[in-house]
Image 1 (cartoon, rainbow, N blue to C red):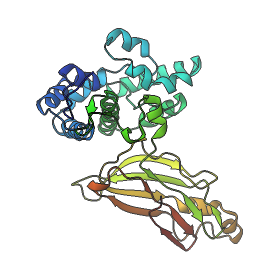
Image 2 (image 1 turned 120 degrees about the vertical axis):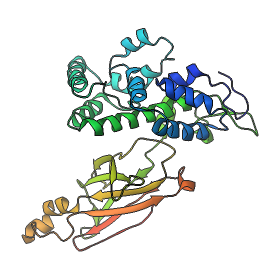
Image 3 (image 1 turned 135 degrees about the horizontal axis):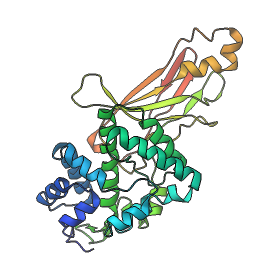
Image 4 (image 1 turned 60 degrees about the vertical axis):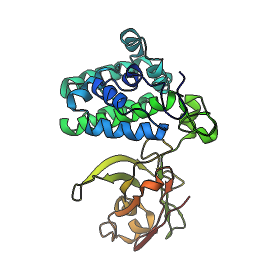
Length: 321
């Protein structure tokens, strides 16, 4: 697909509809053309999706996806899909067996019966067991919360598909660019593997002089305009090196705003030999640690590593690299 210099002129109504199955989304994106860059298109897509598309439009977009693991159904229903869905689910399919696929199918039916739409997740790079675990966990959500989460997953998928269009050209050189243009990576699988979550962390137990392993960590973002309300993003536990697993999707950009990392230090301390031996497992001084920080609009392409240095009666944090 060819596009005009830095204009995204290769975009059509059909193209936007393939990126997101909402007709209202595709129509509004066409109305706001042209776009000067991929970043401009992504920022506009976020505004359109969250402010111009109603719930019916969200449900229309959800319906344009197959059930996770059922790629053949999509190929029959949406032959112009460019193979995107098969690629997005390739990691899941590569790690699946018949038993897991059957369990996934059963949980998909339960989910649809409860919420009225298919289970939607940005599956790129995710193994099948991780997707199944997410499905089971999200099944316990309230319907209003799950609708919002599904809409967030759709937005992630839309942004990845916009990046794969490969029609974005710089004004200076006319060279096509994508999410990782500086790395000159064009293959979607390589793009995914080269990315990392924009926010990462690790914990060092300075009282023991070693990494803090097995500490549960949660990442949240402040909801704009709401007083002290936080949107859940992800959770993980630190490994033997004290590093938390992925707390958010891999990307080269992050949404500006206020973020909060919560470390379950009380549970960790109650399990350590030092506290257990002293009989103070029930009198932990810091039951948890909140680390709140801001990402400014000019920092959305930066990486934020926020470690925690911790002991039973003190802690400190900093922005690392």
